[in-house]
Structures are given as structure tokens and as C-alpha cells.
Length: 284
Image 1 (tube, helix red, strand yellow):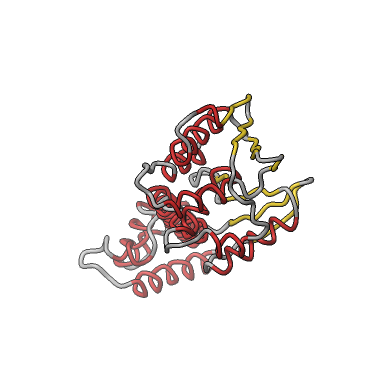
Image 2: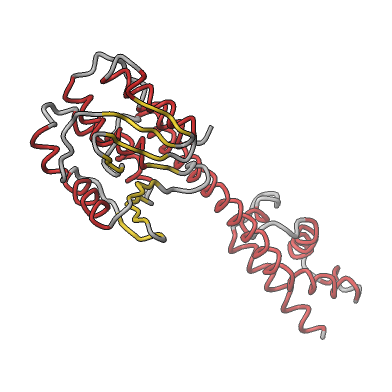
């Protein structure tokens, strides 16, 4: 099951106890972009299963007999005597009667026109409309609710969409899909943890490589001194430094200092290695 269908299953999981105003708010959101022929509402869907589910829900909410709706492949036709208001403002004034009506309106709208990507792959939630007027009206409506939608044209259709995960979470909460919103939040947290871990790993690798590069000139100098059989000409503390440097090429100066008995500081290691380097240059 896609994440979109998971969201729709969650928001459509309500019973007949909802208020009549909320039921009609759902219907008006559901049929917002539907074609209206005589007293029939015709809505097309991507999958037959979606049409069957919504047909059953509408039948439960408004009618007792399934004869009043028909499912034809990916299309659902509902017979309705409700008035078709031309704008969302008219719907708000005539249908919305309680604070939950906005939520049910958006449930219906998303059920028929919405899709959302799997948050583990990308962040994108869309409402696909058939005209600029419809899309612009929905965009303005969402802005009034405190959401932050964008709009674009795709072929002959217009898309009102959200790309930021925070905006998608807000929309899902508005339509009552709290579990789905939590999945989006959790996905973001997991991505941030993975990204942080990768940055730390990359940083550690870079520091190790940097230490190896920085130590290479001293390693070359020590090897050159050994090849010339001149290591014993160095003071004892520099001989010890040379041997530890060869044994621990990957350690930075701070960690290398801990290998001495007693331990010495980072600057102490640096100054000793510099003296070794000067001695090697004098031999050349």
C-alpha cells in the first residue's frame, strides 16, 4: 500500500456518528473538482479500490441504498440533491456549522484530489485540480487556515502542493491524519540522525587523512636518518619520538603525546619532530 493510501485509510476511518454538517462538508470537499451532470456528481480516480471505498463511505453518510451510487471502473457516480455552491466562501457560509467542518472538508478534498509521497524517499504533498480558478481558490483557502501552499501548472492540470516536511505535517494534522504526520516527523528525525552520523564519519576520516599527510614529512625524515645509520646520534628523547612516530603514523600530535611515558603535550610532540626534521635536513 502506498503512503497516500495509508493516509486516506486513516482520514476515512470515521463512523456514522459524525455531525450532519461535517458529513456534508466532507461531501463538498470530495466533489469540489468533480464534474456535475444534471443531479449527478461524477468523480474519477487512479485506482478502482479508491472509488469503491469512497462510494461505500458516501453511501454510509448520506444514503441507505447503494442504488444511489455506481462504480464504473475508475469512476464513481453519485446521485445527489445537494446544492452545488460555486465558491468555497459559499460552502463556508452555508455548510460549515462547527469547528470540525474545515477538517472534514479537507478530508474529502484530499480523498478525491490528493497524493503524498513516501516521506522516506521525498517530501511532496499535492492536490491536483482541473483549472487555475479551482487551484487558486484552494490555495487561498489553505493560506487562510495558516498553511503555506504553492501552486504550479502540470500539463492541463494545476497542482497545489507542499514540499517542506513541516508544511506536510501541518496539512496532515489539519485533516486528522495524526499518525501519518508522526511518520513524516519520524522520517525527518531518522534522516537527520543518518546525516549527522555521516558528517561525523566523514569528518573523522578527513581528520585521520589530514594527520597522516601532516606526519608524512616527519616519517620520511626519520626513515632517511635510519637509512644513514644516524638515529643513535639523536638525543634519547628524540630517538623515542622517532620510534613512536613510525609505530603510530595515523595518530595526531595530541594522541601521539599520550604514547610517551610520561605523556607529553601536543606542542611537545611538534617541537621534537621539528628538531628531528632539522637534523635530517642538516644531514642532506
